[in-house]
Image (tube, rainbow, N blue to C red; front, top):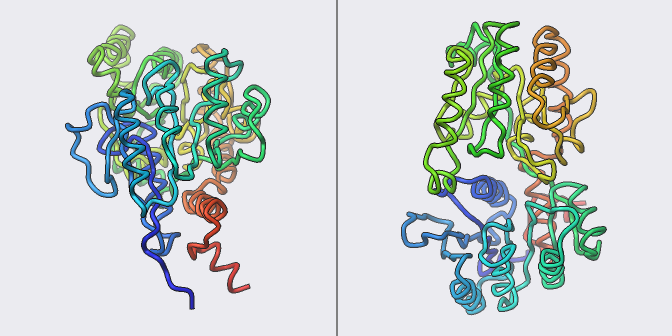
Length: 400
């Protein structure tokens, strides 16, 4: 019998709750999914990225903090990690805005000082990089043991636009939650929407989400279906809130009032817990994805809607083009509220088409459930460290 060695530790570097942002939620969900697969043979801690490191009340598994916008903090944290003999592997969630310097170049100060093996996940991979971005990403690529991306397009860009060695790149999709087991009809009754056709968008609000296009589309949609309701779930993005308060949300509310859509559009100013979110998605008739950036590499909100079996109408962007086809959803050109309204009206008129589209979307996300994503991560950990952690995957191998 091989004994466990509880000394081993993996450190994630990321934003983390109670900070409210997409990457923080992603990392929390990922760690929650990975931990059972490790069977107690290795611990997971978090180094939380935070500009206000002394103001945020972090709890376990956060064991340290780093201000990525201060080079001194980056270097100090690298030295602290190096001195901790229990840390075997570092997993970094990367977004350019999480670090200071041009294009977030302070991360190089951290990585060049780090003497632990590390994996880095690029949440954003932009095409046609300028010289500075190219040099930065190539430098990160040379230092990393492995690079994780979440779409085939991101992997292609790293190889073709950034000239990263294909052997360093691995694709692991964004995870998705289990769909609510409660029927759409019962959920609509619970949320007092039993007499409504429900269109939904969720996520932290900012102008790049393009919510105004969904609101303007509701003028046509509500004329055809007065019982239609567009629910926009989510707080204003904390960075935007700090910069300009609720200016964007107030603009959206004014748009609702100016177009007499008070009965057809609801702005739900809440950070919705996962269980409630999945219930909202399960009762949704059509999910609208209106974000403006065609180069957005991935979207958890988009995948959650697919995994919940929603019929989806989406602006054209990278992940939509990978995941949607004639069966699984509808892609429109960005900013075309008439086209958005026209397609929504069609789906609301054709219930069977709408339900079938949601079913195909659900089936296409079966390989993205968090448990399967977690196993892919633990297999990667084992490969890098050349050490089995007795995950469900390795247990299966040992019994065969």
